[in-house]
Image 1 (cartoon, rainbow, N blue to C red):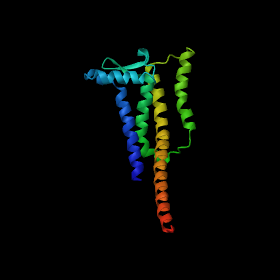
Image 2: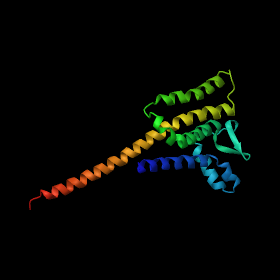
Image 3: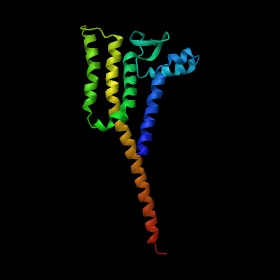
Image 4: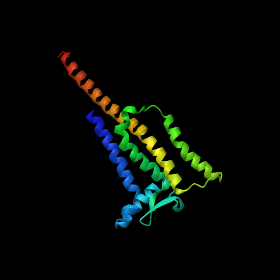
Length: 173
């Protein structure tokens, strides 16, 4: 049980650090522009970072667009809520991700068909909805996979050690 708690805490630390990185305008404003530039250029590979679709913090564009920020922030909230929800979660229900992506696809479709203009708030909310639903599913799956991997390695090492000890007992010299 202690090992599972440690795995969850490592995941939470990673998700928290990721969320801190995406608010790199604070780094720009705090006279650490080199780190900010590294963050912006690194995240450019996973987000378009268009100014018209981004949130500005202290007059500086965030490192990701508003929808990505909603996803990451929702994922952080979902990760924080995971320990309180895990008794009620079923990790094998991957259709939850299909449900979670519906608001994003609806927002994009309505914008492309000129029925409704996709604005910053709809992008943030649709991303947040996806992130908060995806987090418990993914965190639970990652937590379980790492826990099983570590336990299988321990069992394998124990079996190898026992086989080595037992083979010594039957060796005739």
